[in-house]
Length: 425
View 1 (cartoon, rainbow, N blue to C red):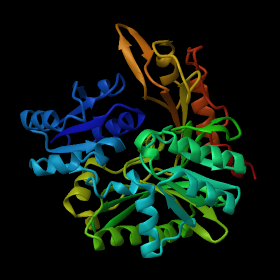
View 2: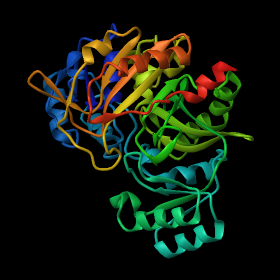
View 3: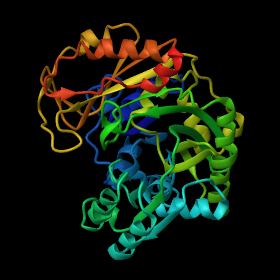
């Protein structure tokens, strides 16, 4: 079958790799794609925000499934418009994508259906929000309600930080995303990411990962879109996975259906594993980036078959198989990220890195200029590897990083440190 993949990042490169391995696939197209995806798919210069153009392309190329990678097209209703035109799509409708598009929507859903999450309050004006922060004290968490590319959350350890975060949201730092603010109690524990597929009624557990949001070693510095990840997360034991499915994922899918907003697609739950058990930090309505890169390296099932089952309401007939190996990815970012950063600098050494044992490269923000590969974003390249343990996967990934010649880029040197410490003891 002909498939169109929407997106251009490392997540989409990983999805393209998995889709390309499906026996059901005839031709894979990607819009707009990137130089790495171009080795697996036919890249087309389509603007995902131009829904009419996407529909026309699908009709022209007889596309039988559209896989939407990023969150913005989901929240903008691309799936709704494709399905209305008779084109099958993997991903939630615009209303269902509010699970990611509005943090307040998700917190209210949790309150309605008894899903464990941090205590919270919602604000649309500055002064009441500041009064609340001062009354609650720090540490406290301040979130822009809408989509902010992974940068709209401040875990404020001091009152001054919290006040600055609230003022930043209402002063337009995150545009329309910060017009409303959600303020939450600080949760203490270990973070984990958990993924499950839903067809609106049935759910299928996938697997876990841990990512590193902070830009610098030792989890220091500002939050980013993610500087690296590994899978599986050791904290997600079989017992904890069962609790997450029974206390968080299943009640969410059932609640969404009861509210008349069935969720089809992937549920990416950001979790805090506390002394009481798992609590939901937030939902994403699509696969994570860079978590997808490590998930797809471990996946042994046909992802296209799973996507079709999610769209068609037949997930109860499916199962999923994962490799016992661990996978780890290191994000190479442009100097200055997540702030101002330079574009157009050249990356060399990718062939040598890809030749390292167990290493796979995923392009995130790159472009071709003739034979040269140039940086074209903040997070530019993922150097990923598999291994029998996280320690082995980590060593292999950093062996690959060492081959990359890019003076204008940087990476964290401690991705996977929690799991490596566990494996030492």
